[in-house]
Picture 1 (cartoon, one colour):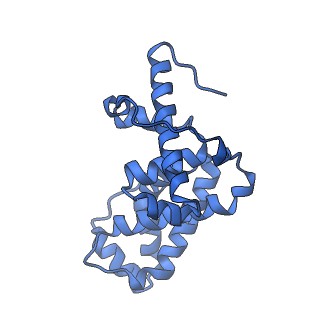
Picture 2 (picture 1 turned 180 degrees about the horizontal axis):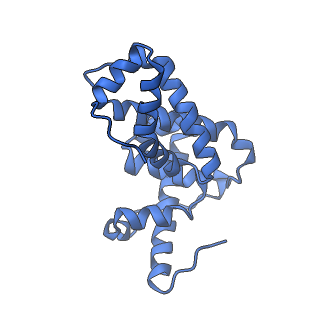
Picture 3 (picture 1 turned 30 degrees about the vertical axis):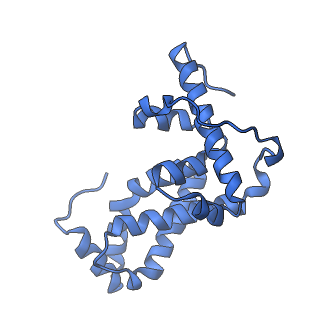
Length: 187
């Protein structure tokens, strides 16, 4: 657990900019849990998330001199972790089981069951989504990216982004309905 050192996040960043290694370690420890939480939303394997978090902090320390002090550090770190997770996912894409877009079914505007879920419920249910559906859902619904941005980030067509989001929402609705009647996680 991280102990408070009496130094603010801004001071930590400034000390890191000056190249002081002990403050890089303190910054890492301070934001480790946050970065892991962001990474776990995009990748299901904890070892992959740990790799992404460590790679993200390497990127942070290499580029910290370019960090704009007028903006929140946490937001900058979050963007780096998200991009690193997406890059990791893209690098390992050949190992994923993707469904062909030709099998897509138009879902239309379904019931708004997802709006009645708490954040904790959604995050728990999201563990059961296929990885690509979970990533698109995270990017669109949680992080606020639009379909054009998601398309560019994941190298998929804009229409695929919309389909994956619809499928994710539909599966979340289905999982939620199953949970209300003694839900059992799919294997």
